[in-house]
Image (cartoon, rainbow, N blue to C red; front, side, top):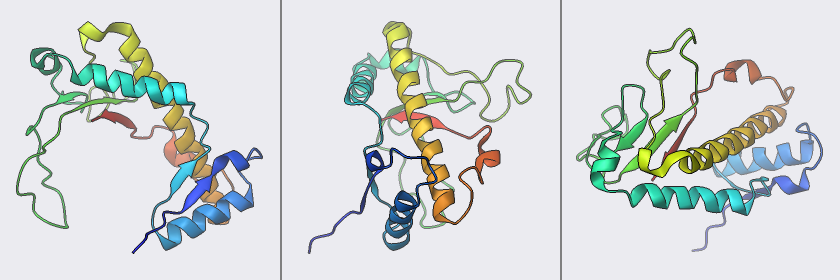
Length: 181
């Protein structure tokens, strides 16, 4: 049995986010399959290659360097193999802890932000040995993906028959993270 994954090409939508053709394709793909492949998203191959390089560099670090930035109370940093277990699933009980390791970063907020220090509003942690280039690669990809997510949110609004900015007020401070696995 062959399964076809719906593909939506944003490259064909050089017009505004209110392009009803793309909105219709997204609606059909997500209504029938629940997901789709996005191509023509505008994130260049260099950007994608650089984040893969950053990911590889992080995972090649000595274990002690990764553990030096163990995930903090703000959900940022290194999550080691076996360090977490999903306990909130309503589908099934977790029988073991995670079997992967990852690096997590989230949106940046200043120390004078009204929610600084609570829940997810805190500092990112960075591996010292990878320096500024690692941070730059992560931030660049993070911002590119956030821009794409904003565009998709606007296009989905149109698919629902709403204005492109109908959901914008819900995303003034979105919970956004980049996780390198």
